[in-house]
Every structure is written in C-alpha cells, then in structure tokens.
Length: 163
Image (cartoon, rainbow, N blue to C red):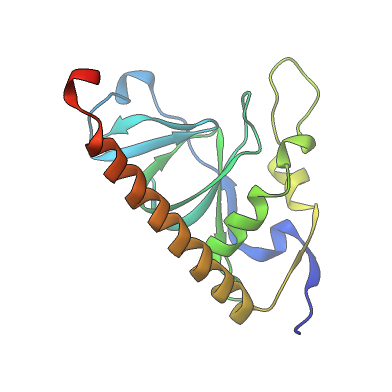
C-alpha cells in the first residue's frame, strides 16, 4: 500500500486565494454564470472571474469551512477561497478530503466567523500519491453523479399538485 505523506494545505495547490468582490446589483436570480460566496450559491451574473475546476472553501459566514467541488465558469466572491490543485494533486480528491476536515474549526473567534487564507494554508494534511487520489476521486464522483441523477428522477416523480 502506498504511503500518505503529510504536507501543508497550501503546498497542494497552484492557486489558493479568495475571490473578488461583486456589487449586489450585479447578482440576480438569472444570469450566465453562478456566483459563489462563503455559504454557497448566491445567484447569477453576466461575468465570470474563474474557469476550470476547483474546491470552493467558504471563508466567511455561518458555514465557513464548508467545501464543494466546482467545474466550469463562475464568479467567486471574496467570501470564498478558490483552491486549484497543483500538478501533483487532484482537485476533486482534495475537495473531498478537505470537506472531511471540519475547516470551520480554524475560523477566527469573532462575531462573524471567518477563515484566514494564510492560516488555513499552514494547516497539516496527509495525502496519497496522485494515482491513488485519482482512483478515489473517480469512485466518489461516480457515486455523486448517481446521487444527483436519483435526485433529479425523484424531483420529476413529485406530482405537480404537491409542488
């Protein structure tokens, strides 16, 4: 069995930074690109500031430390950390692993919980070699795809008079 090695979180990523601010009037229920903040999807807008795949880590708010995987084009706000794996790691695997780490425990103790990108990057994490990461990510993403398909099927089974 191949060994998992310990690193600092920030050493696993080629990009590990907060997004950018966006004006409230630019976010609506309609638009081309999703807008992600610290607590997930905020709405949609007509411009993007990210393209690719990443782990989105909530940096501010009640759910700071939550992690989701995203692939595509989107606008990432300053309340989200955009984490793109380096060439030695798999972004989707790291998103799954980070989601298990209860990252919210690293938030500052203030009225508004928040994670420091710098402090989070210093935290230790153990990861396997890339081929193992890819196998694990493939299995888990297949399960996620099946769950999503079942959710959509179930949504279509609900009679309209209950909606």
